[in-house]
Length: 189
Image 1 (cartoon, rainbow, N blue to C red):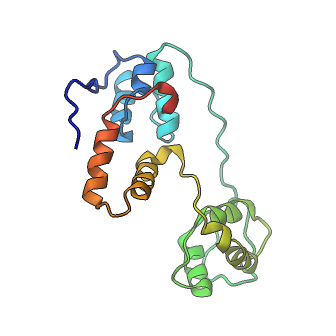
Image 2: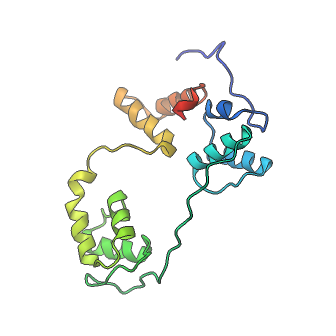
């Protein structure tokens, strides 16, 4: 394994950083949340949103306006449900739905992106329609998809294992630690 001797060290996370310097380094959501609390920035949202808000605050720029949050309306489904049960507006991926889908589809059922979207956008459709949607999307769901920017560790591990198929988890995590401790251009964050 290569040495990081002479390599640039990650700075302390503080209000003294510039937005670009913040973006040059990997920070956990927990670390970013502490900084947000210290400088009085809203801690809401995911890591990507929080990072952009902190970058703006550190640079003295007003952050981009957040889109208004849509509130769930209506009641959530309660057991018992069956194939003719209609999804109401604002239905979430609940335990009631998970139990129904596991009974109908099997223990391999899980809420993937296709099913989350169907439930979120499927008001007026039935749970039987949802089961048909599950089966119709299995081939597409099995394909490798892009992993979101907020899941940097997952993206790194998938790429690392593709390059090192015989590598161990311990080796992959050591490579991750080395990767996250290196600076990067702000555009990469």
